[in-house]
Length: 598
Image (cartoon, rainbow, N blue to C red):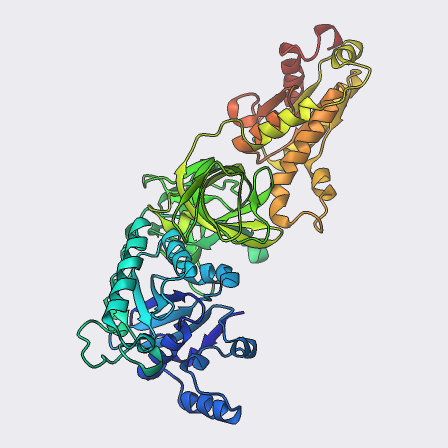
């Protein structure tokens, strides 16, 4: 739940907007700082301050500026911020969206959610308590999330009698910590948030910048339009009413600019086309779309691409593509991140299975010491890890493009961790190959060997995959090939992908797993059927190279024969009978069918 304070004070369209996250250890005064900013910049709705003061008087509570933000009853009762709260205020120069992120260690997940949307951060440290372990955690999280503009507020200076030595000691210690993780704050400000000292108005004897002046000095993130174009594909829509034949690819432009007529490429599939139109709801088609805009596009050449692919302009610096990468991550799950367990990775629009391959090192955010050689990552630990996805994904390094270099990991339907991509690494073996090795090592064979079956049946077993043509035609061709082989005494079997899809229980398998699981099921079924000596035929109109590799791996030690209309194996313009006859001849040429049986 998000508590949006003062929505009536939303930003004016002609003024610059800027988002800032407030972080820090619990009870160090974040919400009080925000309350003073709202009050002292006259950004509260009329009568709001008086209303909260009257409520405190009726309930015999001492008034606190934090109550302006902590509007949820359970938050006020506990005195801690549980969820991220957004509020709006204005300075003379621009409009601010201020995000109050939880400081308590149990709510770090919410803090990550808030910080991921921010362009800068204010980090609050209690002068009396000093730098706490959570203060270090939050600093490291800001670094992980790519937030580089940070101002540190040393709050409650009145509790240490405004001693400048205390302030300088905290500044020295925390600056040293931040520098070790590559973060260099723009400044430190001694404040008494309760009294509004150095928040908006400068306190007596203080000559440095106030908190508001530091905020106004933060630089607005710019140049998103100048970065290489990135468009994570979220979904594909087909409209049929009133003879509308558009097939619209929808998503949000993360970086760059796209124009009608631009040639584009999709990773990881590598498919290419050209932008025909740029679409949007409730407005006429556009000639151009920019970073931050939610939009849709149609293509001049219709190609099959899946949600989760990353579209970029042909000629721009391409993203990376692969299934293994090195990453920094912060783990928030109740159970530790462990090897050989299946998780779900969300990166841009991609949703793919992922596993922990190796823990390169684990960082103690309190002591800043590194431990190497671990097998798991515990809750609230920061680690450098090697991760591998179940199928290739497209991404950028986080330093090059944070929008397509950040990810989260889901465990049991909950976000359990998040991090950034540091480096793409070569894939050795991989998830599927490791699975096949374990499977084959324990495979229990029957009393009849495959060689005996093939000799008795008069043909070799084979998994035949038909691809590269329209789905309806491939289904018809596959069934005709099955019939032709059957009538000649061969053990042929038509394996319909639709039957596999119907067998996947949506209550057990979430929808974003279905595509990956389809290839796993087909490959495993093919392995069983070829072990029984069958000629298995399956049509896969839109199979990509990565999908075919999965099928080939899963069908080991038997082989997969791919008949692809795009590779000259057959001419898709030929009639069905000619195509089927050509396939039968090809099976004979490959010694799958003996001459005397044809």
